[in-house]
Amino acid sequence: MKRYKLIELLFLLLFSIEVNALNTQERTNLNKLNPNDQAIVLTWLNKSCSTAEQKEFEKTINAKGSAFDPVFWEAYQLGPTEQEIKKIRASAISNYRDRINWLQKFGDAQMGKEETKQQLAVTEEQYVERVINNYTNGYKTSALSGLGLVGNDLRGAELKRIATDPQNPSQTAAQEALKLIVSRNRSRQSLR
Image 1: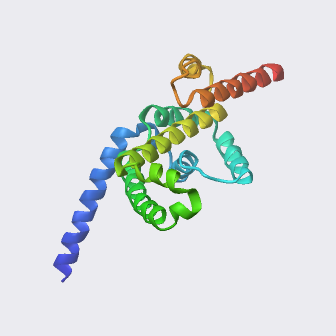
Image 2: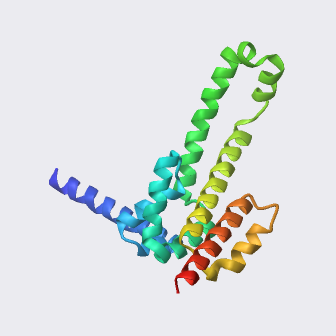
């Protein structure tokens, strides 16, 4: 029994090392942070919070300053991790099935026959891809919002490129990030 437990522990340790190695390769800047700061960044990137909670997060992120700059830029460039996408995909598949059941039971009465027919025409693949795209866009938008809180002029050209691209779903977040960075730079200059 002890031998089995030892083998199991070794397997879990090796698996953990492999996952961390993959994560380190993907997220070098995130992995430079201590675990508490990593949790702050990951919570921000996956946020869905009230205004009061968001203000608290903003204060926390502002307090960390430029240490988070490369982390948020990396998050924007790479988007969500494969693990995050797998979780979102599994959740979307489950939600799709629940959605279909609801539409079949209550759709006609709640939404009308035509709308129900249109909603039922959405395939699982279409639904799941839409959920993943929305999640990815939200993740990247959050990364740029975080960058606006702590970023500096070094990202200016890159942010301007995103801010002027009407096809980029993060365009507005980049515009707001640039405004915050410019405002912060003016405040610093006026204090000198």
